[in-house]
Length: 478
Image (cartoon, rainbow, N blue to C red; front, side, top):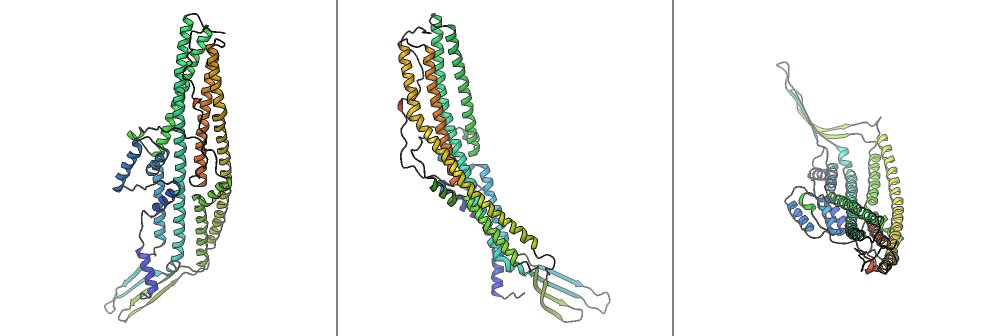
């Protein structure tokens, strides 16, 4: 081997100076996540900066939690996500390893004479794989593409977590409002049952009417317990996503469900966004490209077996010292990498099929998600503009007729319960809308465009009456 060759020396130096930059992969992931969410993420590695992150977490949790704060806490603290970041370290180590030359091998032997007239022989050689030097650039390109594909995949996982956090946050918001609604219903039912008891004691209502109110009170109590449990479970789901335990789980949430926007982005725009910016699709493209390069590498070296070149020195007994190059060739007679090439060809076709499947599915999922979003928005608007005002009118008319002794207390209570159920259905529809919107953001790989038209304001009289207390003494009419 000619050690004075500048080209060869440069390659060897570059191969020997490769080092692992731990933060490189995560910096690229952080840039991709910030570009699509506007929020920061961090890979905790037990450094002094981790203490600053913990202080920032406490600051985010100190006030009322918002959707963006919940996402940022998860990006900084979710254990599963932190484990995913570690995969970048593995991938980068593989990339650096691909850029390293195999170590040269040193062989030596010494022969001692068995008789007094003989001399000692020794032989030394240093050899280096020549094919490794030749294929080093292409191997580095393949490894670099694998690293980029892994980076995109990890960033996609972060965005999936973001969507799940937003959906769970919306679930907590809705459950909190439903619990507040159920508590009002319970208070009203308790007041109605108490009133019926007093009326029954005065002989103004039947035993059936009293039992009906008492049953309604117990039913309201059971429904409140169910919604409180659902709220607790939703909070714990959000705690798991944010990686919280101990005193940090005592966060509060004052923000109510936002109103639904008046318009949605066009389907064509959403499909274009999905194909252009979804990171899992981009990762699949990179995977196809690296498989093609790996296939080219295997094809270009199929007739090259192992080639070792080096320096050999030998000295015979009583003879001169010999120095010269050494060459070792592997003859590719039986194994011409035909099996490896066939495997890579199949994997490349498989990668292309996977990319096509992802693209087709992405378009279909976007179409389905947008249809669900539009339907839920229309339903929410229908509740706001028609159903809730009608239920309010029915309750007000029932109250008026009850005061005029035209209907009994059960009819008034039925009107109130129907209004409560309409409000519950409205809240659940708005909740489903925002959860569907978070899912659509995941499907297009980033935040949706901000709606240009504002949503209509809900009717101010849509809140249910907490108590149907009659305005004067009223005899049971039925």
